[in-house]
Length: 77
Image (cartoon, rainbow, N blue to C red; front, side):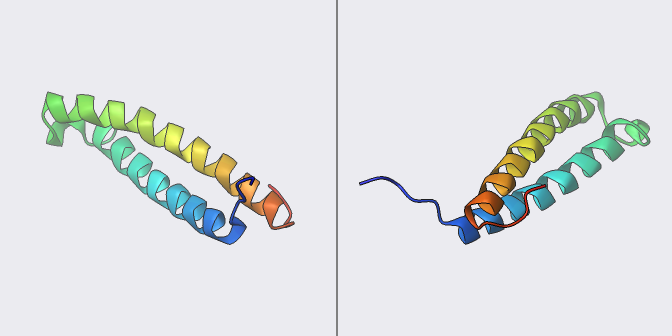
């Protein structure tokens, strides 16, 4: 028995992942670059680490979205 991919569920999951990772990425950019004087050094370091993780999540979510679109025979891109 081979596992099947539920395309609609995967697409919904990937879209939520994209939305969440973009929101976190924008928040960390604000913490790290235009307003660092408002935050202590520890939070800035955490912001930079979170920025890397949210960028990785953004890329993974995009790949999952492409897989879901291909599974559903939708245009990929």
